Image (cartoon, rainbow, N blue to C red; front, side):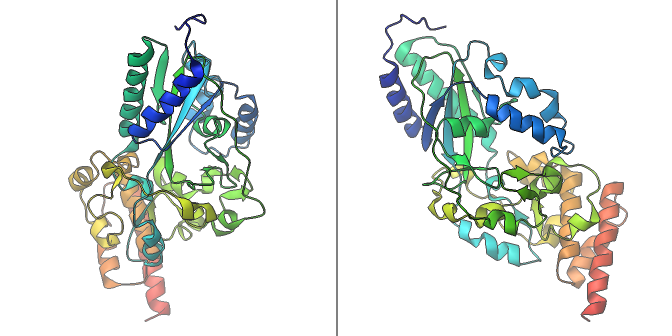
Length: 361
């Protein structure tokens, strides 16, 4: 641990850290303390309301989430960093969403899994700090431990909590990943920024499933990102019809946000869309066997869903798609799938397709 009388120029070091972080591809750096008492109360209310759904891990380590110094003893400061991920064709997302025959995947998941890339860059930044000042106490994170990343980023001045609960920046929107370095360095603390959502309710009004139940409150049990990625098993029929062609995640609340016109296009080649997944036809994606799924999603966040949920999600999208022989043929090919979850959603989707065919022969 660095000693208080080490003669360190903390302000100069903070400035240097910002410069080194920029060289490593981070777009913004903020520094804060470890006090999460205000966020802890919000988390407690969220869990008590059951809005976390089946994500039991949120409750299991509730205390550690709100006490960074327990997760990494000796921590007195958190260096919070932002890395932009928006692809250059982000504006074409609406085109895919309007085309019921194509599958929509959240734009953050189209490239390489960000966890590893961001963590490696954070480690390089920590190594660079050590070159300058010698050994110091730290640990790097990127959505990889029980950490309240968004409240820390907001305390560090990287943005404010939007009504959709994402972190929003006035000059960069919300298309960015967060990473942290927990450290014992006595760095100067940055001030939070003010909230600029004002009277805007576009994210609330547009949410397909009504998951944003009020400003700054999200019920994950209705959120398409939760349903398509975290939730396993059957999805409520009432929610299926609202999911449209979203097969992994959902960006609607971001796409409609006025501040995302300022979002920065990512310069990271690893975040560029892979394998044409920005808008492939549902029937083509549904035809993938598990080996193809694993091959095409290697090193990508899409792996988090798993093959069974991948097929379940696409089956729902096919059920919501315009009626077609191709779509119905794709669904029939999975009628005898080994998974009862897949079979259930295929049966539902076929019934949806056939009903639409009768209405619009």
